[in-house]
Length: 320
Ligand code: UT7
Image 1 (cartoon, protein in one colour):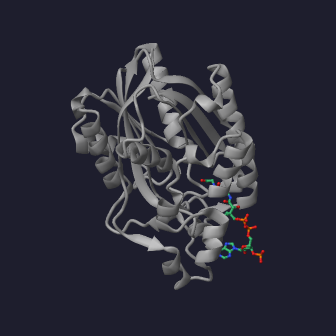
Image 2 (cartoon, protein in one colour; image 1 turned 90 degrees about the vertical axis):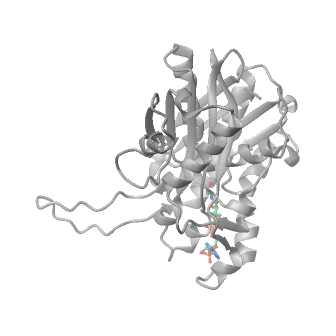
């Protein structure tokens, strides 16, 4: 038994912030951002929250999969920007959807969150515990940025992507996941400062910090290795893959992966020019986009891959 994706959905905040908008409020240029990353604009939430975006993406995925909320027995949300420490985003979504039969929890695997969620559903399905799951990546990264740090704040955007997966004989063909916590310091964001009478507290509220070059090097080495591994385990040649749906962090990373796999860029759909880096949401948002455009046909072989803070990475070869 494996996990098969039967529907997708996504939501992006209505407020769009272009590189030119950023030029007006910080020392940056459209030329720098585009040439270094490929990003042209991002969606920044004003009214929306991580939960509200996730609920909307989930409703769209349920409709696409022709599934009702009470059929779900599992909800897993990959997020590093939950609205609250608890209850979890997944439990809030369960309540909003009326998914009364689901077990719901969040996972923190940053930009690999959707891939890790898919892996959890796959394991539950294989063990026979659950049969139908809602997997979501949802982020409001804009609230975790230091907007005085141009080296990070221009990169990220907000949004949510969702998929309905069910236990089936055919779906995920092979998958791999990994973590390297020893390198966690290259991309991190501290929790809220402690405020109790027993702890001398002089920690200011911190925001996202990143050693971009270290993350870049990690990505261009690890992602091709992970993809090569899942293809090798399934005895599938990269030429047989229709699309490689990668985490949307930097178009130069995607170009490097394409080169290392000796595959043309037109097999690597991108939307980071429109959405920026939406962390756990990026893979399911892009998957939904190509699904809704009618670019996927039953039986197509697709690779999904995510990488990011932790450090974490994951890749899956699936039959659509
Ligand atoms: O989803 C999580 C995964 N994250 C990633 O995959 C990120 C991976 N890393 C990257 O994508 C790239 O490393 C960045 C896009 C973050 C940075 O690109 P880079 O080519 O590594 O640039 P850099 O950090 O070496 O900075 C080059 C210059 C610096 O100026 P000096 O020291 O050369 O004078 C920066 O101060 O660019 C400057 N700079 C900027 N200039 C204009 C940094 N940010 C900006 C900016 N606008 N927004």
